[in-house]
Length: 436
Image (cartoon, rainbow, N blue to C red):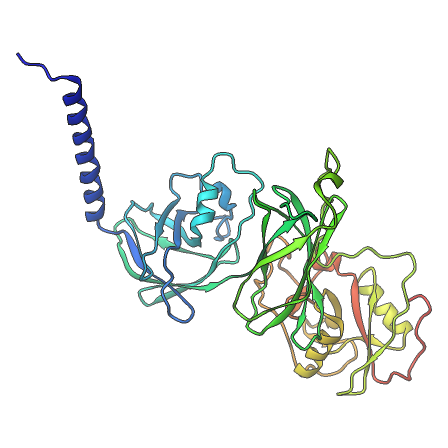
């Protein structure tokens, strides 16, 4: 009997393994797709080399889908993905569990980070936001939970073909933080502040302060609320007593700003040996009331001759009391021009306005003017566990393009709205309070 030598044995083993790999790959390609379709942008162009995700979700007692962080979901064996080809096509070939499933989008880079075993301080940023999913004659729109996803029912004997996912490019500001000597600030939690205003330099407003961690090269990414018109932005950063601020720059509608460099006013030697973590940031719209308020001037709207002023106040009732003391009333917004002027004059913040629910459950202006115009935002703009449903008593103008939102005692915005806008028909009427 002739025995094979060691080299022959290794050669046969390698060939056998290669045949198995090729067989499995071919077998996978021949497996019918359980769900397939195309990913396109809002203009109908294919989105190539992007990840489509699919995973089952648990339903709550009242029929709503339970939300889980993506960092938790991505570790589940039922979390499956498909990458789009150059024509935007994708196909899932794995078995899909029967029941409610959620389909979403994620970038390849983010997916790679999610699958790292030592994931820490992860900031989830997306390149595209899912807008809708068309399956047959039905179109599903994105959920309020998660960075662009939608939920629908799936049966095990179904094979969904020609699914069309429409996505919109996300807007963000990307850049790097460096010390005064040009070396990057790496793996550090930085507090960012972002302000924005219209291209004509009106309507200045500020995003809520945010803490973002730079990566191993000092890079950072800040999400920006979507807008179709160009806007001016300014970004500042603070870290352990050092700070940096950018010049004002323009972001066109539906685009992203990259390569922003923020240079700190110090070097690494200026950082304490044991840096303290950044202070927790206040909730959106929350302000600290000073012991004595600074006097402000009334601003006259040239379109209607009315005078306006913004004040700090502890709550809705305090805002009404202050208005009475000023021989004024909480603002009544009667048309789109007045809404735009107010936003331009005072910026996008949380403000009490003069809308309230009467005993008959109907909205009315405190000034008794007829309601000729409304600017309500979508009811699902803010998630239920932040703004609970139920009977609403008053309204605030929000930081989202000045949209109005109804609130009741116990809602987050009811508790933390600390500003109001007052209006008076004539700026000659009344005397401003000394302690406004």
